[in-house]
Amino acid sequence: MQRFTIFFSAFFALFLLAISALPQNKFEGYNIILDVPEDHKTATCTIRYVPPTTNITISDLDTKTPMRVRSCGTSGASLTQSGSIASMTASKTDYKWCFEGEDKSYRVSFRGDQSSGTVIYDWIPNREPNESGAYNIKDFGAKGDGRTDDTIAIQSAFAYLATRNGGTLIFPEGDYMVGGTANYKGLIVPSGVIIQGISSANSNSYTNNVNQKSPSRIILTGRSRALFKIGECTDSITIKDIELYAQSNDNTYGFEAVGAFTSAQNFYFERVVFNNFFRGIYGHALPITQKTWQFDYIKLNHCRFIYNRDAGIWNDVSNSDWKIEGSLFINPKKQPGQNANSMHFERSAAVLISDTYGGGFPNALGGTFLDVLSSGVITILTSQTENMTNSIVLNEANIQGAGDYSYPLTILNSIFHDPIFLNSRVTLVSTGSFYGPKTFKSNPLVRVYSTGDRFCYDGGIIGCQGATRNLFDKSTIIFMTGQPNDFGKLEGYPTVFGTDVQFNAPVQMPSFPQNQLPAGKANGSMVYCQNCRRNTTPCQQGGSGAPAMMVGNQWSCL
Image (cartoon, rainbow, N blue to C red; front, side, top):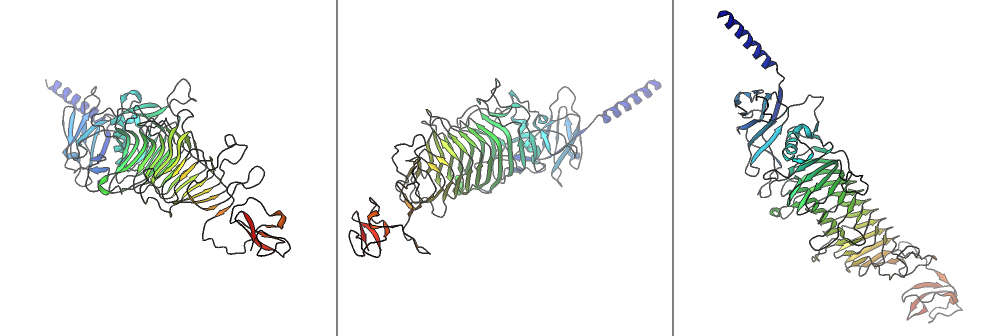
C-alpha cells in the first residue's frame, strides 16, 4: 500500500508538471468599446471604455479540449473559472486585463454602455515583438468562404488593433460576409488601422475570366446599414486593394462617417472598389449641432465606384477637404428613386477632383457627375464625364443667396459635354477645357473668366458641325478669349473684357485704311483709320488719321 501511494504521488506530480509544461498563450486587452452612437447630446468618441470593475467573461471557443486559463499580470487575482466559463476584472492601476490559456483564441464579453449594449470579441494572444503590427483576419476566426458570417471576427480584429493604437489588418483571398449578426451596427473602424486586401479588380468586370468576382471582397448583407462605419474622434484610417460589395442597394453604405461634436480626420482610400451600394461613401452630420461636424482630409486614389444607386460619394458636413484622384465612376441609369450621381456635396470646401472620369451609357444616362448645393473652393483638373444627365450642378434647390464669389469653381483641361447648371453666386474660372455648344445653363450672378476653352467650334470634331452657339447663357462674362475657326478667324465671341477695366499701358487698336474698314462689326467696335478725316460720319478719306467707332451700323471717325 505504501509502495502504491508513493507511485501515485510521483505520477500525480509528473501530471502536474506536464500540465504546467503545456504551452501557454498570453491574452491582454482593455474594456474597450467600438461604437458609433447617433443619439448622443455631448461629444462621444467611437472608442470608449467601461470601468475596470466591470466583470469580464471568458468563454471557450474550442470545445474539443478542456478550458484551462490562469491569471497573469496585476488583474490576475480576480480570475475565477467554472467549467468552460471564466470571469475576471481589469487592473485598477493600468486598466488592463490579462490571462493565459492553451488555445489560440477565446471569446471575451462584457456589459458595455447605454449605446453599445453587450460587447463581444474573439481575442487572440499577444504576438512576439518581431511579429506584431500586421495581422491576418483569419487569425481572428474569419472564414472568407462566402457563407459564414465574419462580422464578429472582423470587429474583434478592429478592437484588438485599437488596444495597440493601430496596425495593419490583411484580408487574403476570399469573400468575407458581414451583417448577419444580431443588432448589427456596421463594422466600427478605430483610428490608426490599415485595411489591406490583395486586389483592386472589381466583380463582374468584362475583363474578368470565368471567375466573375474580385479575389478579395467584403460583402454586406441586408438593407439599411453600413459596411464600415466611423464616428467622432477617429483619425488616420487607410483602406487599400479591396472590393466592398453590397448584396442590396437599399440604403446601404460602403463607408459611413457620422458625428456631431468632435471631428474625424485623415482617411485614405487607395484602389478600393465600392460596388452596388446606395451610397459608396456617406458622410453626414447629426442635426443636433446644425450639421457643423467636420469630416476632414479625405483622399481617394484610383478608386472605382460602380452602380451605386444614389451616389458614389455623398457628403453633408460643414468641412470636407476632399482630393479625388485617378478615380472612375460607372453610374447606373437615372430614374425615379435612383439619382445615379457620381459625387454629391451638400456643402463643399476645398474639393479637388483630378484625373477622374465617369459616366453612364448612351441608352442609359447616369445622373450628375458633380452635384453641389453650397460650394466652397472646387477645382477640377484633367477630368471628363459623358453620357450623364448633367455634368455639374450648383444649387439645384435654388436657395436664395447661395454661393460666394470668393470661392471659385475652377475647371482646367477637362471635357464636359453634358449640361452644366450654375444657379448660385460663383466665380467660374475655366482654362483649356472643352465643352459642348449648349453646355452652360446659368444665371446672371455667375461671373465667368474663360481662357483657351473650346465650345464645339472646331469643325473637324464629330457632332460640332452646325451647332448653335450658346456659350455661357445668362452669365456675366468678365473675361473671355475668342477661339479661331479652322481658317484662323475669331467667330462668335472675340476676346471680351468686363466693365471697369483699367489698362496700365497704352492700348494698340487694329489699324486700317478707309477703304478696308471691316464690315459687319457690332456697334461700339473701335479701330484706327489710317487716312481718315476726323469728325466725319461715315468716315472719309483725306485726313491724317482718326479713331473710328461703329455707330448706327457705320464707321464714324472721332
